[in-house]
Length: 95
Image 1 (cartoon, rainbow, N blue to C red):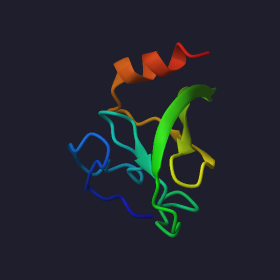
Image 2 (cartoon, helix red, strand yellow):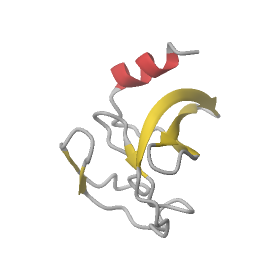
Image 3 (cartoon, one colour):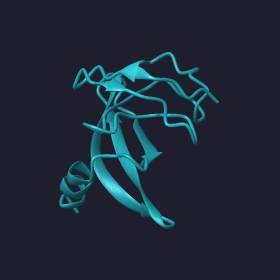
C-alpha cells in the first residue's frame, strides 16, 4: 500500500501523505485519481480524474462516491479525517 504526497490535478493544491492509510483523494476538493485497482496498489492504468458525486454512510464514517471523467466507472473511497467537511456536507445535500 502506497501512501504518497501529491499535487491535486483538479485544485492544484499540494496534498501531504495521510500517515494512517493510503492517501486516495484530495482533502480540499475531494477529487481523486483513478490509479488503484485495490486500495493503495497504484496499478490502474486509467489515470482519469475521479469526480466526487455523492456520499454514502459506511459504518461510523462515510464513503465518497466518484465517477471517473475518463472511463466513466464509479468508485468509492472512505473519507479521510482531514477532508473538507463543507464539501462533504454539500455532497450529502444531493440525496
